[in-house]
Length: 187
Image (cartoon, helix red, strand yellow):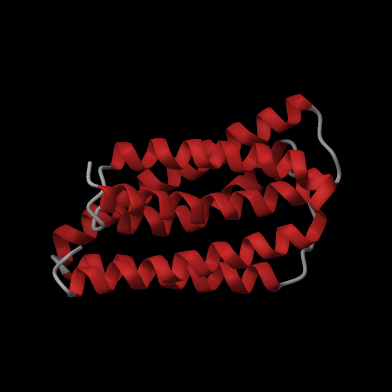
């Protein structure tokens, strides 16, 4: 695998990991047992990877219908998702459900993985094997969750807000960069 391809995977995984980290810090602020940390880590990792696969399926379908234009649409989706993540990270958190179990955990995992749907849509067009992407995203998601839950008490809400904004910025820059590479014939 080329260095440029690996760099693409790492950028995508880090942007998703920052989003997971932000939510995990929010849960970690309140404290969590080892069992709860494991349950949240598994749920977030499975949600991230599942949405990437669903997004890749949608992207493949779009590619069959739209041809090479689908790649640009996928990169535009990354930019759009990045902007959405930035806006959402700036809003005040409602905190209306318990992210440690049940429907709260399901809704939390679903909400953090929506950006993964956009990533999945574009992943086929950045020249990265899906399996490699999924492994990298799973590892990054699990590590980001563990780190966020563990550091939550120490770093508090400031890190949660900053991670959300940086996640969005990285997604926007990644989408723009991939689009520019494709336009120049290098992506």
